Length: 356
Image 1 (cartoon, one colour):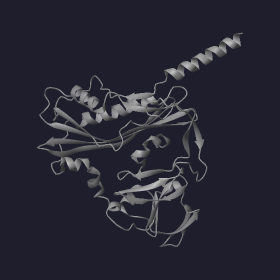
Image 2 (cartoon, rainbow, N blue to C red; image 1 turned 135 degrees about the vertical axis):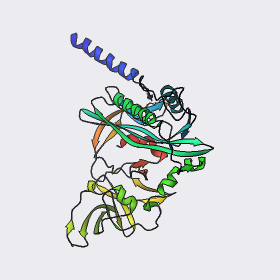
Image 3 (cartoon, helix red, strand yellow; image 1 turned 90 degrees about the vertical axis):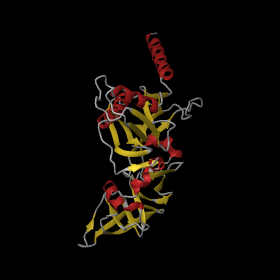
Image 4 (cartoon, rainbow, N blue to C red; image 1 turned 45 degrees about the vertical axis):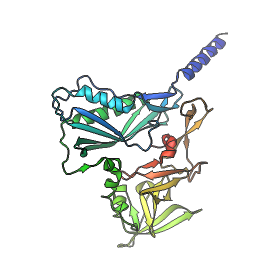
């Protein structure tokens, strides 16, 4: 009888957790009560949303069952940022206008064994608006990382602190008078950033081996003689010989960012190298499941068609990828022009929680 009662209690608790788990998780900025900037150069605030995807802010894992849950703005980020600005400035602020251009804000989590790692990609620009021109103040481009047994709350809090403290630190920062843009320029700021990178200004990429994105963007390769090895048209390995010494050098996939062979570039993606192509000014590739990290999270369970984002409510379990694993739905990835990160195109953003 006691066993039956215990089983009923466990089932009730299980049922409660399923019902209590929210369909979404709200990201909310919080302002420390003692954070005040008395000598701010700006007393007005404007917001520009330049994200290519803004339906939601990524995914976190909630409840003891690690449900994949979409992160949302509640209330809107524009209202939250304006509220933060009003709270940390005083009546002594000068009559300047601060413009916040949000370019990326995305959460994801990965679970390994008994610990979780949470990530938040943040990118935004700050400008001073004067006479319909936008004068550059600063940019925040960072990856917030948190490791913990239960990471979600700490991740959301750290992301909030990162944004709020950066804004506060720049309220006394003078804008650069030599870097001014029109509104059209601001909305196309990527174009100006790419103008400083050889990768986006040349028609023929330089053959060789690139250990990191910086050398790839600047087109300064290590000039090795590359002997590629293909399996089913997939570049899986290569031999590199130093042209000057004629010595063979061994490289692991993780030690290489990209290879260029006869003008064709391949980026290192998990344990193989996939060809990239240029489309609409962006370098892209098709990810067929050869994900850079050796562990990703495979969704299992029954989809809930009534869920707001129609992503279902899933339990997650770590699955180790086999070499050259192919998934049913290959997705197009874009190479970020500032840091070389692989980012799903907007139409594939719902897959982003698979990735670091």
